[in-house]
Image 1 (tube, helix red, strand yellow):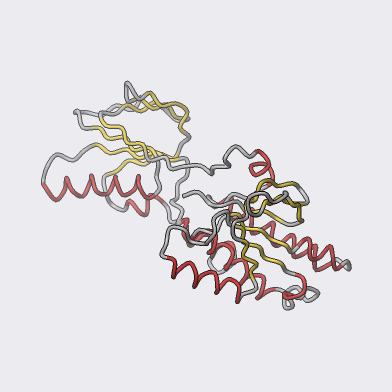
Image 2 (tube, rainbow, N blue to C red):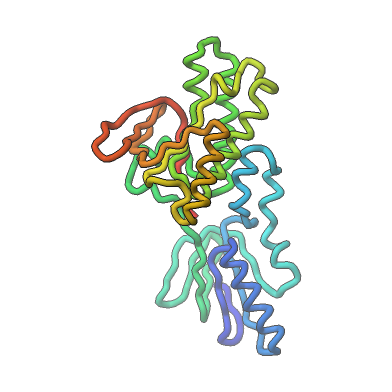
Length: 276
């Protein structure tokens, strides 16, 4: 069991932005004030912090994957903070005790900064066949899937098959959804006809942005939403408003338009809306 002296042991679970910021503020505030330094321990299953805002650029090959995952120990710097890379197995909130794959940690103050997971809203087909977009593994998996579709389409002599392989649907038109779709568009536009000489971007590629609400960027001013929608359309992205993606399958997806419309199936790949 990890044992420390005194009664000022702080255990922080989660080494992403919230957890790292907490460790830095606690350490730097105590140092600046000249008060006793808390005994700070940070735990995360990864030894890096992911800049999730740059995942779309990594997916489109604009950024090297290693450039968006600085090491936690490097971010912490010379601060007197103990970091442990290990899996959390159990959290005893009453006793402020945490069991990990390495050891058992006790604390006087327990901070939970574990983040969130992708919400599939109970739709099992999304979870099974969709592409979440929250972690480095998600981003690499989606990029590899896109490249695989390009490789297969480039070899195909069947025009309908090429179009099926190169139809991509983004469910959700928030800020993250728009960025994923625009980065995907730029990647395909740059590679089709060049690296993949048998693919014509305008003939073979179909990009669909589906949003259940009547406008994109619902959390932003309407002028921003209108400008974004016009920009998507100029880039040959098919924006479908008041359209709900209701299911996914290995060779297709289901969507439902305005209230009362019948579900329709189309072929393509499904990328689910990122959850921050």
